[in-house]
Image 1 (cartoon, rainbow, N blue to C red):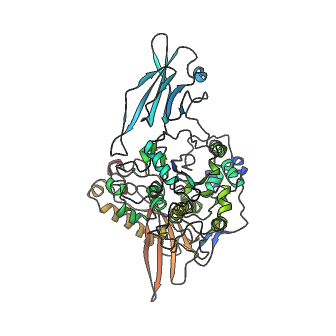
Image 2: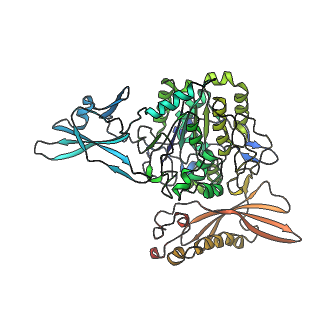
Image 3: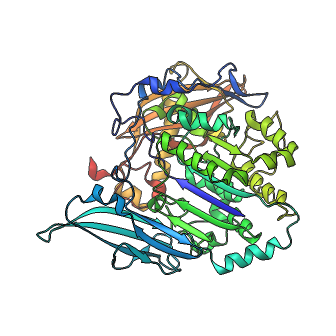
Length: 575
């Protein structure tokens, strides 16, 4: 029984407003390989929630659509080295059938360096000196990561690096085998393995646009989509932690603050619950420099899973055909027969030209998610399957997914009772029916991330909009005034222009909600929700939630070090 989570920083289609790596020969025809049924106007429609069902070729997305060309990490010759495992013995092997792709003439000289995670530090590692080897190298059983480098050696003695590859090695550990065996003795039902594959920053609609081959494969195989899966926080961390803990970001900061490694290690992650109930656990990300748990802090003191992998997932391509091939390989390996697979994203794109459109606003909050259930599971738990099907067009969140992961443990006979979500007491496992009349308050989605409001365009001059926009500017000014560093180094912002104003269709005669997008001077585009309340003949305005930056700030805030302030700061020295 395995719980394996893979988190991939997906730069493929990460920024619509740049042409870098785009193929100018391609056009919209690429995307027409996939179509979505748009016969219904809403994904969710009830008295509390109305989420519009946008066309994937909505007019405001068309100017930003171009196909990006896949560029493999290695030469067309493929991988020069690989790991062969027999029993518990790992051997590093040079594939000499690929040799000529790297050096037609001259000698190939290869060496490997073992990579060690520094004790009590997620952000630091040691690399041993490079050990030369010929053809094969029998590896020590304790090695988990290594880097291979190969040089072409010319006749005059000159050397040139022609190949570099990182290998992650999964070896069965004695204590893990002992744990598996001890739980297996008491099993009365078939345990269910879980594989989670998470792509960063991909909305449901952009998944269909950018990856039509993968989408067609998934839907043709009978996966379950959740079309109204709403994010619960700004970026990766709050959304991943909601799934891992059932906490919202305020609770996470108190109970699991990732700037305090001792506290993060004691955080009740679902990973610990699986390991404590006889599972082998693994977690991997493809870029340790922006690791979900250590991006803004030191991360874990002790590895949170049995296998904790970084920068070793370079075989999982970010290109459509390669991702489809990955799923084909997983299916052919038999993994789909014994595992529930959850393929998802944490949120949509948060920056770029497209993000400034209404479709971009909506897509940022509606990431894609698909769930695969093995055939035997469908037969054994028909009610769970029926409910999951019903929930495809119900408002759902990562809090529900957290409870689903616990429910899998219950259905595996390993957990008696699930722990309710602290952030969302009303949330349920996705194997239970989610209420039809469900709104953001019921699902514990803060107003600023809620897609239930159905905003539509209005005239920017319908009321004193500049005065209302100043509420957003004052909020940014207040944030920058909290730190002596930002007061000293950052330019005080002012309103440059009002870009867009939209009103919620759930507004009433006395309470109206407006989505306001502004540009500030010297630089930055932000959005926020303003609530207009009419009481006793007077209008009052207040900011609901917080302001969110929707364009990239790059190096504008390089003069400060606290990540929280970076979206708001423009360094005075750059003026």
